[in-house]
Length: 227
Length: 56
Length: 253
Image 1 (cartoon, rainbow over the protein chains, first blue to last red):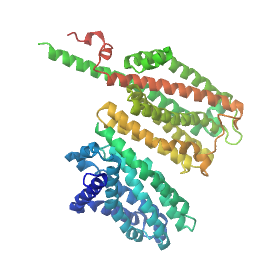
Image 2 (image 1 turned 135 degrees about the vertical axis):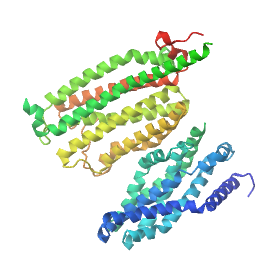
Image 3 (image 1 turned 120 degrees about the vertical axis):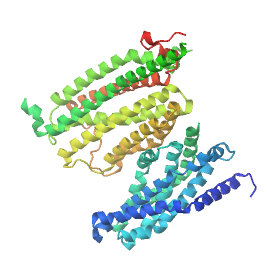
């Protein structure tokens, strides 16, 4: 591809970010560990009875994945802001929304994808019935990109703030509640033998909308934050 | 009269609701008063400091 | 230039707005107080007790106007936020940020009075139906806007970021309003409609409308009062603010 073209820039950014994550792959495993620990705490708190655990399994896994992703969301722009490359992205001739889309994609690939991979393990820890697992994986596959996208907009608003950890959670949570309701709702419906395609389709619709709008919103928010 | 205050048994729910309404809106009305006092006091302090720095 | 348009543009100037708001503020507070008193009298004394809920339904006269105001305040905040973001008008940014705490206060009252009403009526303090959940989300959105506004140093940039967040969250407003229609909720469906007849007795309706009017007037009074102070802070370096200090403090150079 032609150097200097937008596609070259996007791929270069993708490659760079993935390389940066790879160099600190120990850190990248932190969200995974967090999710496993959170999930493991529930049997300790609620007792090991399978009936109780399987009732709450899907929702708990969803919340644990959500919180784990919030952990790594904070660092989405941090290193780029500190070394000045974020401003370079903003003033570059390529569409900022597309470049941010690449960064969001890397966030999802390095945080959410491993979480989805270990989701069967989490399901076992909480005695999730086997028939619910495919629905859980599908719901996670639809909800986690939503979280990355919406989270990126909120991170763009708080970029550069020193103590923004709690504020970021406060900003993201009201916006992500529908995804949680529909995702966990689909799993619970499947577990109880009801139809579950409607919530999944809702999630898919929100995801398509967010795929188009969130990078644009994040770009606008970043321009506001960096002025 | 006692019937009215007892709200026919619902007093524990009705009066706290009205009280909350009054208290929260009163607090909201007073907030700008205190804020203004704080802002002006701050400004006066800054002006005093700037004036004392200018006088040789 | 059309005098009305001229006056509108003048309002954008902080010292003019400060004087304008200061002149109207006592009247707005007085109007809100009087209408509120009349409405509360109707709510507590003249409205007949509901045949099913008894006197507990009187909580409605506090709960419903605050619910309406919580939504109205958010709309006001988002609209001014939009104007502030697009046209960079200082006053719009100020008005938007001033309406956030007032809207949050109304939403808080709505949730707590709703809980107090729910206990005798439904037997529970809380339920996660669509109306209550979306109203709670509304409160969190307000907290987010207020939190973001206070977290950024530069006031104008803070207002723009918070206004942006408010606009993103506006999708929650139709969800709150239509939740009782779209979902099977414990919360009742609407009985008061803007067009067409309402499903509520007139003797019960007029205190509600009076209190709704009173809370609207109060909202504007509160927003104007908060905006005045915010402008003082924003413009603290300017002469017109310094002139407001007690005479002994004003420097001469």
